[in-house]
Figure 1 (cartoon, rainbow, N blue to C red):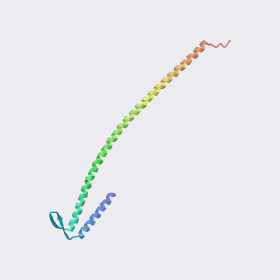
Figure 2: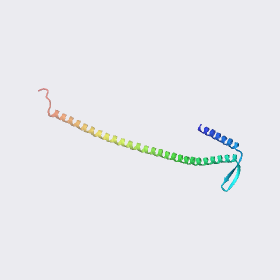
Figure 3: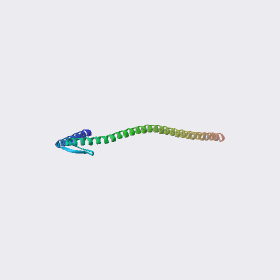
Figure 4: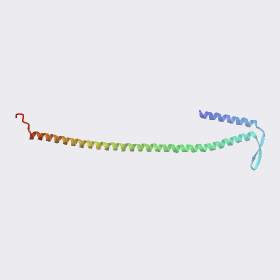
Length: 142
C-alpha cells in the first residue's frame, strides 16, 4: 500500500513537471562556464528534473546498499548469538544437572548415614533391653 502511494505521487510529480515544462517553450541561454548555448526551456526543466532524480537515486542507492550490507551482518551476528546461546544453554543445563545429581548423592549419603546411626542405636537399645531381661528376670511366681 505504501509503495502504491509513492508510485502515484511520483507519477503526479512527473506530470506536473511535464505540464510546467511544456507551458514554457521559449529558448533560454544556458551557461556552461566556458560556453553559452541556447536551449528550449522545456529541455532545461526536464534535464534539471532528470539530473535531480539521478542525484537522489545515487545517494539513496548508496544508502540502500549500505543498509542491506548492515542488515546481512546483523542477521549473521544474530545467528551466531543464537548458536552460542543454544550451546551455552546446553552447557548450563548439563552443569545444573550435575549439580543436582551431586546434591542428591550428598543427601542420599547423609540419609544413609543417619539411617545407619538410627539402626545402630536401635540395635543397641534392643541389646540393652535383652541384657536387662537376662540380668533381671522377672519372677511371676514369687
